[in-house]
Image 1 (spheres, rainbow, N blue to C red):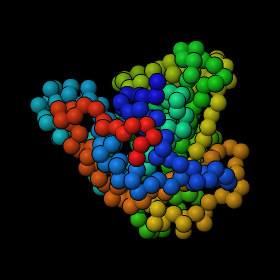
Image 2 (image 1 turned 30 degrees about the vertical axis):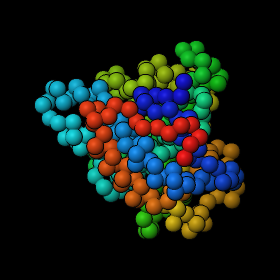
Image 3 (image 1 turned 180 degrees about the vertical axis):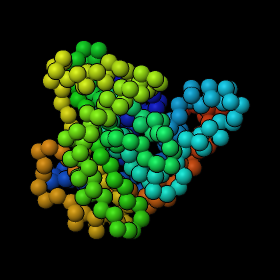
Image 4 (image 1 turned 120 degrees about the vertical axis):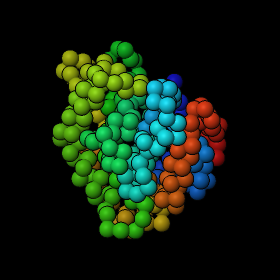
Length: 280
């Protein structure tokens, strides 16, 4: 099984992320064809990152508001937060695709925002690989990514900043994030994530030793990536992996995806339109 509560089969995403190199950092160059297809393929899925079909229908019934109004109340406005959210969502897809065919589950932290105009708190992307669940084993893995996005020319340094904040994840922030997620799970559903999943990693000494994998991810417009690669590491770190994902025409690509997400109401469509595995 390779889907989660987004209704997306992550095997379809694997061809989107070819590694041009693996050391001392990973470099991924997304093709023009794949990036242009995302507005069609990912509109429903990105909207579900913020609000599930079930919640959308329930809130429509309870409030009398339209599905479009409720979606608009969850999605970020154009600008830095939208760009950052898209980078995090892309990292979520990247990590799940790279673990395929093993199933990856994770909280959709974008659903847990207190303010849609600001980033979600704590570690950016957290996912779990639990190949023998409900049995805990030494093959269990928690994936944690710190993500920085750069879609337009400016003074930000996404690679350096992602590496710096990845250090925070490794030293303390991941642990705090897991506890925060458990507190949220006590009060509201977290999709596929169960309390038992979180307890397996929070109370680590009560289970077989699990693995942790940290990534510093920089999602950068392809037209800017060569200049930004000056900041890329020259040595491979034993503690984390730096991943640079170059996306052509990044600002227009994510803008078109979010525009599709705004229109992706369950009354219009209930499933994402997916290509065959390995196509495009």
